[in-house]
Image 1 (tube, rainbow, N blue to C red):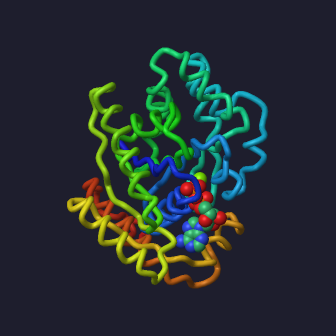
Image 2 (cartoon, rainbow, N blue to C red):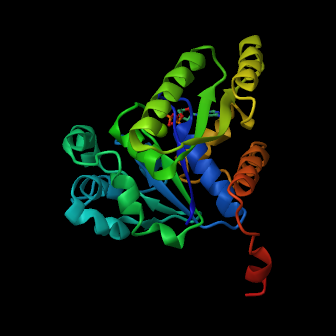
Image 3 (tube, protein in one colour):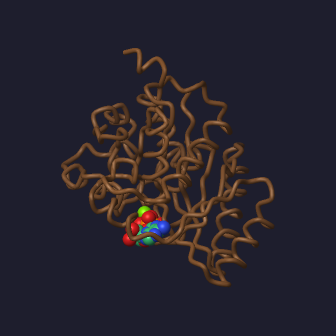
Length: 267
Ligand SMILES: Nc1ncnc2c1ncn2[C@@H]1O[C@H](COP(=O)(O)OP(=O)(O)O)[C@@H](O)[C@H]1O
Ligand SMILES: [Mg+2]
């Protein structure tokens, strides 16, 4: 069984996609096999990673896999190769997924059921969530039962995280599962008083969860525009260390087997 992680926060523009891509890139840089799932109907990650064509492709797409049990095992055909990871892209049809899943039986379990067909080949499955608390996010949280939370170091994040935790608590009761918080990524951090106060608040609010700081860096936008994580990007960027620290912590939290770099070097 791979380690599975949803990157979630219902607030838009906080860095879910950026964090998901770069954590996946860092895990790959450590030698891990990663499957990246873009569950956001807007398909930012799919487009950013170079799969615009798949986003616009005709059915069957991720939408059909999630909404039609007969098509579920077509998930394997959706997998695309990126230099750092395999990717299951989103699709324009995913905009219709929420109402469709509302009407489905077991509407929150469809991603978990579909992933069973492909997940064995990977050490990690990283799911990039949409910016709202609906059925797609429920599918991500249910399938992974682990969450990494990107949040801006701004006071508006307090309310956003309260809502997210209320939602997760309700979901845990509905499905009789436990969703574990694996860390908070304070993103786009600048040297302001507000940021300093919020970092302290994160520390108080999540005493048992690691909190990382990703600073505001234009290079993160440039790497994204170039279709890669910082780890395949041609320029040196100081934030790679922090993403590697996240990857190392995940390996530890998930009790992953030792890296095989020695074996790989031997050919
Ligand atoms: N640490 C950062 N420094 C600079 N720009 C960032 C950083 N994190 C994210 N961004 C930019 O902010 C915008 C929103 O980020 P994104 O990852 O798409 O958020 P979300 O997926 O939560 O909507 C994007 O243009 C992205 O390139
Ligand atoms: Mg996004």
